Image 1 (spheres, rainbow, N blue to C red):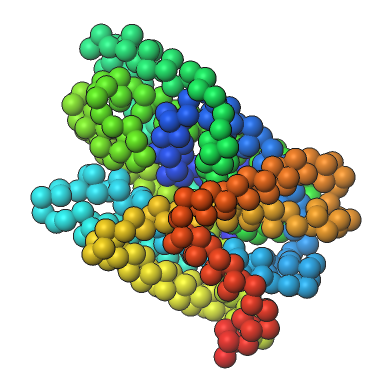
Image 2 (cartoon, rainbow, N blue to C red):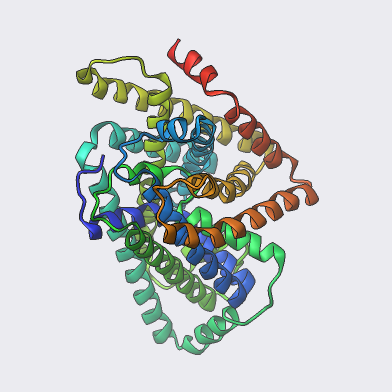
Length: 441
């Protein structure tokens, strides 16, 4: 998967993994909700996560470990690898549905109901993801980098064009006033810290196992700290530009909703159409779709690798490529069926499956980030002292915030996501011998 070891190129790959749909709608929604305190909290959390990301890469750097092999050899267990596998499946379940929001806004809803368009977007997403994982080979990273470039081009184009329209309409003072309101200090609360921490961990992609996979391919000269730093900066920059776009959209339509996904599903497209920027809307939402795809490619890689490791029998090396392709097709087909089931459940029951799965996965990611740096807690000698010292603030912070997130689920009686969290963790804790026996059968 990784045949390019240049620092700048791998940094762009990591940034492409980080920059996903959540940067483009959830980050702005949370900043609009919490103001300057939320923005500063986010920046603080991603700052303490940089050492964790770098440490995760150092843990497998130059060892050539596979993901499950790393935990099996170093900690005599595979349950963290299984936890990543199961929760990455959950992310692969609802993330294509979220990306389908954008294609749905471009589709003629008078022809087919929204859920039908969601199912169509799901099929398209998994088709492209499967083809990329099966056929991409050395060009997989190229797909991610190109998607990142397209995403930033779309963000810059729309922000510049929309600001020009605002100047022409004479509503620049309104925009500046809205921006000042967003940057107003509104205090700090435990709920805000938890929400911003979950978004930060989810946005930078730690807690999903990918950085351990990436680390095993890095050369000796490649700096994990620089890779993590560049990725986080670009990731945060994408979120900030998206927030500016949303604020400009609100300044044109001050009565529009800014709650949750409404700002990107309703307010933004209606504003862009109103000011005559429909072509830019198409470009932006297609860029969002491919940004989502780039974020899911590494997760597809993680679940495929874990499945291959646990189900692999002694094979002739020439048969491994065919075995990989079969594994990709198996896991993607299974996940697609689950995703279509989620769309059906949402359509027939009205249950907000996206929020349910999102809440469970985001809460796990806070603890999953700690699992990626387990070598620090076990005092492994191959982790440099500076990485150990730099990791502890993040480990302590995420453990506290993760505990608060679980408590919040209990207090708010979010029993469905809490049940999903417990069931998946319970499955992950099943001994590795069980998984190997039944997957190899």
